[in-house]
View (cartoon, rainbow, N blue to C red):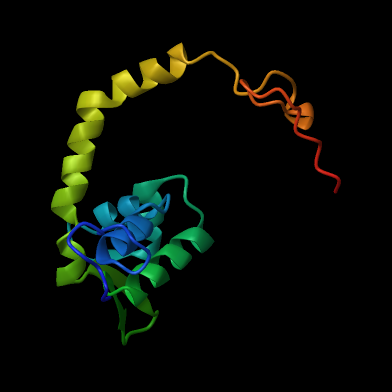
Length: 144
């Protein structure tokens, strides 16, 4: 990742952009946090996290493993047992996750209040006949 000047941390090939894209996934932070207390089996993560499908958890774990944040350990025993744990690199994300969690505790109600207060519609008409507010010309419907 080169070509990033001091003022360009979020350009396409800069480390900050990669980090944001990685943790912006719906399940990444939750899975990392689920692994923060030590090795965990796939089924235990499903129970711990709640609301995630087996397929989505597997995809998320594979992506985190490919990025060097999670290690998969298959024990040589019968029946087979596989555990996942954070790598030292993955463990470096736990403090920032705690910071985001604390921010959410402090400001979550304010965000929800803002969402509740924002009752202004985004469009003057139904989305099919969408005329964005402030535009004079209606946007033609999608001809699919």
